[in-house]
Image (cartoon, helix red, strand yellow):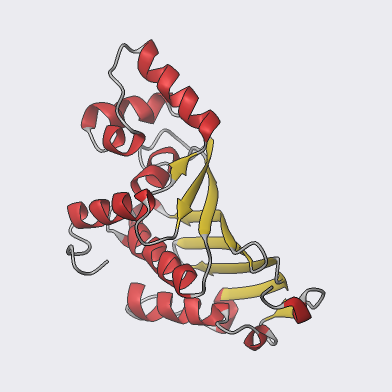
Amino acid sequence: MRYKNLSQERITKDSCYLLDKDPLEFLNYVGVNVFKNTIPIRSSNWDIDGTINNLKVHIKVTGLEIEIYLDYIKEVVHVYDFSIERNNQRKGLGARIFKSIIDYCQADGFEKVTCTAGNNFEDLHWRNSYITAIKFGFLMDHNAHIRYCDMLKRFKLPYTDPYNFIMTKEGEDLWKYKGFPYYCEYHLNPDSQSHINFENYLVRRGILTENQF
């Protein structure tokens, strides 16, 4: 078991070096590769606290807040908060940040990333996480998928998998108003449907070329 000797030890900014690949590397990756140093991640912008089966990594900079939990025992990462102010949206920033999370988690041996996708409660702005999670490669759990299929039947639409449905204007418009919160997972094995969907999205947006993923 990874880090068995640290199972009861609290990990903070000062002790994260105890991990083989500490979260600070992720923070540095985001600062250099995503923000291009335009939004520097300084000591006051981030915090790490918890234990190896519930390690919170929190980043808060201008226009952006991320809170993720790393479970080094179950090898799962949970995205609790991922919010970007509206004036920073539609620039590919969220996709590039999430790509950095995927890169970090994959390199550190995690098996999956989880989240509960929910609406942007401030308004019905269409870039809410109902839609974003699917575009970023997250796959609905079984119960949510059944509910999704029932929605298609209710509107007399043929079955289409959620990703391909959301990538159409008709699907996005319907999901904008009829979507619902759901638990979902991003599987980190290289051949997963999650990777295929996210790569397709990044290429379609012009954020990456096909050989960069």
